[in-house]
Length: 293
Image 1 (tube, rainbow, N blue to C red):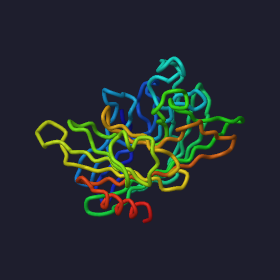
Image 2: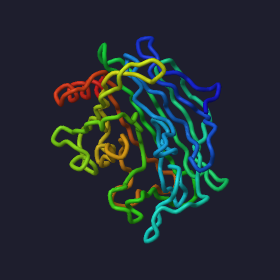
Image 3: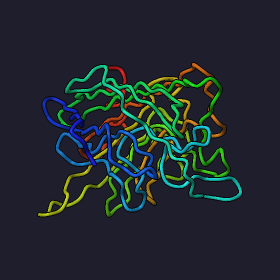
Image 4: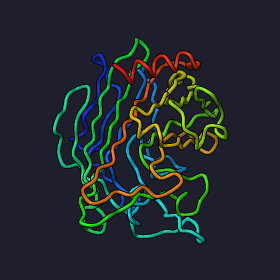
């Protein structure tokens, strides 16, 4: 699925993520650049690519199920009063160029294309920084500009009639393990309490898997997601743990997000990637450091 143009992110000289710019994927998966594998500093993988439960989940990236009816998420499209429906409406995010490319990050230009026309232009900025000997931060900013001559809007299955399914925006598909990961915020815990709420940060903590020959191995891990701008903090969290482990921020939770011609929507998510299972105090302290440094 990779091409020769797949830069590797490094923290203190250690590889922590591979960014695939031109994946070879079928149209139904809404081809788009993604980060996978992403690892902790100790080498534990904390992303998953095209798992059997959702083939269109591609590591870490930006995915939107409804841009004026075009599917940039992959899979089926949710239709009000009809449910998930198979359509030939999939768009693709196409890498154009890197404006900046260093071992610890890059600035990239992308074009969002559907039905033979470009609907959005994106500027994506990604940076990896060391926090401690056991934690680093992924700083991910995306800016979507409507380059068409008319207004467009971003929607989700929730805005199209499916309660609780306001996915679309930054999305991190974590590795599925034998045990369901824990999820918590500064004031709540558990998928039912956390999903759809607004919080300064949200932590997903996995148990890891035993080391054995011939199998992927790794220790326990924690991901702490934080909205690093006022606009991003207004977006509720989309969370899954029981069905699969995934976290994202919802661009269109209660209503569609309009983008007039020439306007730009900007979101910035900073994710702490840590070895071990962090408590609330540790998660909060590392998040403050990651967002402000």
